Image (cartoon, rainbow, N blue to C red):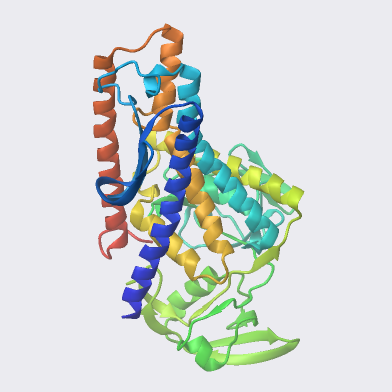
Length: 450
C-alpha cells in the first residue's frame, strides 16, 4: 500500500510539473499569436479527444485525453489546410512574425528555467561538497579503467579532454558522455603531471560512461542511516564522522561497499567521531537489496553524501542561473550530437518513467527547492528540444522559414506535406524507442546493471 501511494504521488506531482511546463510553452505561442493578430482556434493541454474546457471568443480552451504535451492551433497554420487569404491566418503574416510566434514557446521554457534556478540559488542551494575546489581522487574502484591505469587516491585531475583544472561535475559529465571512447586526462601526483587515456565503461541503467574515479570528500560523515539496518541498531547516528573501519580510513561510501564485498557478513569495527568524542561500534553487515532494487549485497544501511548549502545574493544568483542554463543546454546538444554519431546509447535519454522518477525523488526531499531545481532542468530540456530543426517542432518551423527567406518564396505545399509526414513518423518512432528503453531500464532483469 505505501508503495502504491508513492507511485500515485509521483504521478500526481509529475502531472502538475509537466502540465505547468506545457502551459508555459503554449502560452508563449498563444501570446505572440494574439499580439500579431493571428486567430487562435484551440489552446490544448494534451492531445487527442477533448475532455473538458470552455470557449471564449474565437478560442477553445481545453484539456485533452493524452497528457503527453499540448498545442496551440492557429487558423491556417497547417500547410495542408485550404487557405482563404484571411488576415487572421498564420500563413498570411510576414515570416518575421511567424518566426517570433514559433520561437516564443521554447523561449518561455528557457526563461522559466532561468527564473526557477535564480529563486533556488537565492533561497536554498544545496550541492555536493566535493564540487568545491580541485578534482582530487579519493578512491579508485577496483577493476575499473582508472584502477588498471594505476590511478591512486590523492591524485589530482588537472585536465580532462579540453577542460583545464576541472571540478568533479565537469569530470562526471565528460565521463558520462564518453562510454567506450578514449578520454584524455592529466593527473598531478607529487608535483609530476602524467598523461593518461582512460576508456569509460558503460554503467548503470543509462549506460553512462564511468572510469571508476571517486571524488575525495572533506570527511566521511554519515548523512543517511537506514531504519532497521545494522548501523542504526549498533547506535551510529546521522552526523557521525566515520574515522576508520577495521583500522582503515574510508574516503567514500563506495570504498565501504567494496570492503564489505570482501568481508561479507564478518563484523566491522567502526570508529566514529561524535561531538569531539571517539566512539567504537561493532556492526555486522547483512545481505539485503541495495540500489538498484534486486541487487543483493552486504550492507549496513549507512551512506555519506556531504553537502553544502548557500544563499546567493540576487546578482550572483542571476549569474549562476545563466551559467546553469548555458551549461545544461550545451550538455543536451552534446548528448544529441554523440547520439547521432552513435557514440552514446539512446538509453541516456529518459522518457516519462525516468522523468517521473526524478520528479518523485525531488518531491520526497525536504523543502521545495529540490523539486524546483528538477523542474528547471525539465523546462530547459523542453525548450531546447523544441528548438531542434525537425519539422513539426518549433525549430523545424523556424528552419523552413529560414529556407523560404533564402528562396524568397514559399515552399510548395506538396513538399511541406511530405516533410511533415516524414517528421511525424520519425518523432513517433523516436518516442516509442525512448518509452521502450524507459520500461526496459525500470523492470528488474531486463537491463544490465553494474
